[in-house]
Each structure stands twice: as structure tokens, then as C-alpha cells.
Length: 87
Image (cartoon, rainbow, N blue to C red; front, side, top):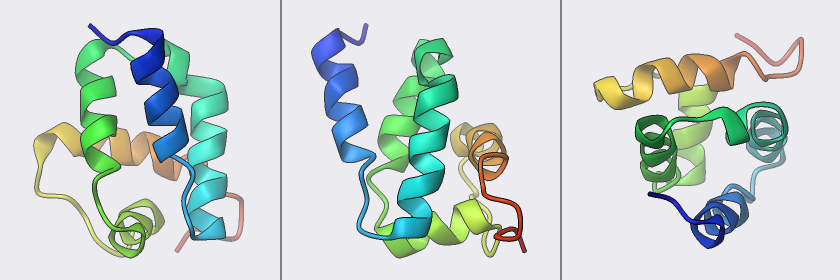
């Protein structure tokens, strides 16, 4: 079970050094974060362990994840890209 402190830590870890990635993650957090179930929240928490460039490649669609826990989450993140940023 994720506590509010755990969720705040995840929100903080969602702030990234790459502006493009930061914008997508902040949009995702604003609209979907409070609706994530425990399994999806755990997958998102693990996804944040990736380096910024690798995570951006996933979100931009340049690469795909082999981890089944990430696949639907990455699709959701891709939907929060700004128009014109999608490849």
C-alpha cells in the first residue's frame, strides 16, 4: 500500500532533467496519478528508475519496453505528449 508520503516521493522523482520528459510526466501526474491502481503505481515507480534519455525514448516511441508491466503505462504516457512531439 502506498502512503501519501510514498506518492509525494514518486511525484518528486517524476521531475526530470529533460524538459520534454518533464512536461509529459507532469501532464500524466496531473490527470492520471490519483487514479492509478497499486500495480500500475508500482510499475510507474519502477519506470522512474530508468535514466532520463532511456525513459524519453520510451515515451517518444523510439524504443519499446520488453517488460509487460510497462507496456500499457508507456502507451498512457505517450498520450500525454504535446501534439507535434510524437514520432
